[in-house]
Length: 214
Image 1 (cartoon, rainbow, N blue to C red):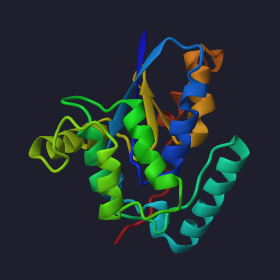
Image 2 (cartoon, rainbow, N blue to C red):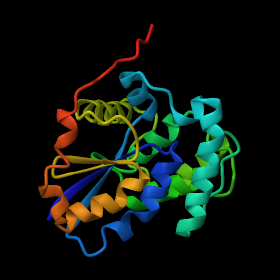
Image 3 (cartoon, rainbow, N blue to C red):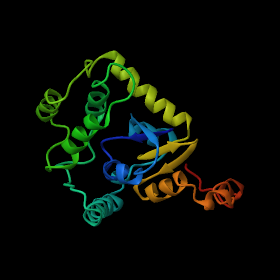
């Protein structure tokens, strides 16, 4: 049996879409999924990037596109009352549902629904408290061990070179984004394209010009 690590942050609508479609993508594959909450903002900071919602024109397009993607794939999605928001409480809540290790799919689904269904305020303390009451918590979400676990997940993702969410990692290969799910399935099904050198070729492409950042 293979193991797939699904790196995500509840703040990302693309992570929500990928989470919803992942079972369909993996249908018929002998694979175990580890759900890895990470802090997307820390990945962005490490790589010197802005998030899609931090660029005004891209923000509007992102919300339009994710609504279209949800519609075209038959996924229920409502934009939250405000976005972006601070997802730390939700990430820690997910990790608090297990005594150690990674949260299960059911807990992650409940939290994703909290954000992306109903058009509520995802960061509202009262809503988060109600959400927590509906989950089985094994640890204090505000406890130091939970905070350490989230930091460890995020640091591990950075060490692997992960730059965004969602990111699926299997057999040492990274498949980033909702639109990479068909590519992921092709890999798992042994598509011969992967043996033709195209996966390795980008590393051989020279950088022709580099934009200054100062």
